[in-house]
Length: 284
Ligand code: AMP
Ligand code: ZN
Ligand code: FE
Ligand code: FE
Image (cartoon, rainbow, N blue to C red; front, side):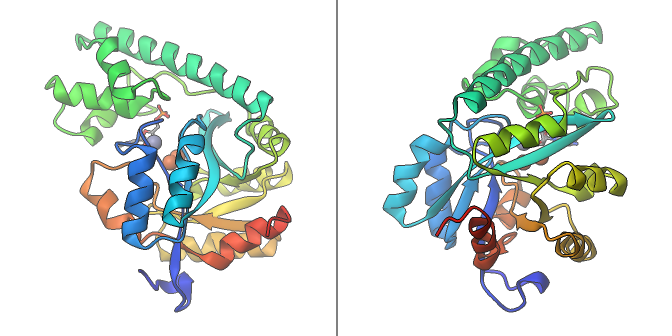
C-alpha cells in the first residue's frame, strides 16, 4: 500500500476509478473485485464509460469479500469541442432517467464505431465492425476496442500507434464522442442521487473550463490520477479546498498494459476522502 505525498503517511486503500469489461476494461466486475481484495483495497468504484452495468453484479461479490463498492460511472461530455469525462459517484443505478440516457449513449457509441470503421476503410484500413463488437462484449463500445482490432489485424503495433495514426481526436478516422454538455451530465448525475467529479483534469482541461464547471455545480475534482504528477495533485487539491469541493482519485485501471498493473492498488486515495464524499450525501 502506498504512502505517497498526499496520503500524508496514512494508508491509501481506496480506488474510485476502475474500468471493467462492461466498457473498455479487460477484467470482469467479479475479477476486479477479487483483484482489489488481493491488493488490499478497502473500497473501490467501478466507473465504466457511459454504463452502470457492472454495479449490480459486482455488489454481492464485493460484499462477500468485505469490500465497499461505490456505485460509479464515467460519463462522456463535450464542451467547446473538448472531451470532458465526468465521474458520478453514488448514483442510483436503477434511476430510470439515467438508465434511459445511458441506453442512448450505448446506441450512439455503436453508430460512432461504425462511422470510424467507414472512415478507416476510406483510408485503406479494412477491419470488421463485428470484431470490434465482439471485443466490446455487449458493453460500451469505444476506441480502445477499435485499437485492439487494428493491432490484431497488423495495421499498428501498439495502442498508442492506433490512437496516434487513426483514432486520436486529431486523427483522420476520429468521430466525435457524445456531445452532451457537462451541465446536462452533472444535472443527470445529481438527479440520480449522485455527486459529479471532473475526471483527470490535468490531461486536457484548461483552467477556465474547470472554473466554468465549478460554477455550474460540479461537486468535486479527481485529484489523484496516473496522469497527474505531484505538482498537479497538489494544485488540484488546493483548488478543490479553496472552493469547498470534494476530491477523489484512482488508478483508471483498464488492464492489459504493464503500467495498469503498476498502478493498481498504488494510485489510490485515503479512506477519509471517501468519508467526506459520503458525508456530503449523509451516507454513514
Ligand atoms: P472513447 O470513450 O471511445 O472516446 O475512448 C476513450 C478511451 O480511450 C479513454 O478512456 C482511454 O481509455 C482510451 N484512450 C484515449 N486516448 C488514448 C491514447 N492516446 N492512447 C491509448 N488510449 C487512449
Ligand atoms: Zn477507458
Ligand atoms: Fe477518462
Ligand atoms: Fe477512465
